[in-house]
Length: 80
Image (tube, rainbow, N blue to C red; front, side):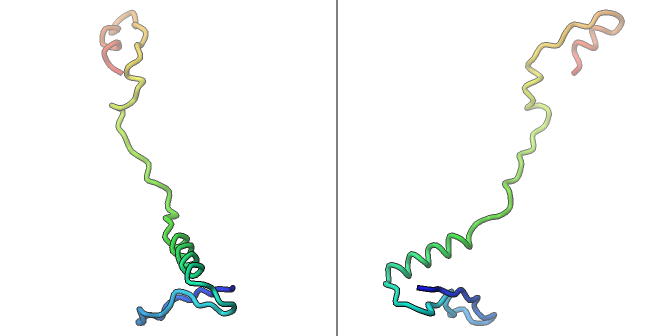
């Protein structure tokens, strides 16, 4: 069995998606071939979008920072 895919004409919506050029496939074989062609054509090639999160979700904010000594040390300990 050899199947040949052919795109439908621009205005024709009833054109077959493929035709059998040799052999006599059963209804089950044609249904399986149809499912394979539909599954192959329905894939999304674009990678999934990356989630963008702000710095508020960064787990590094949970870690303690060393205490800074000297002039302005109290301010440096409170700010990131």
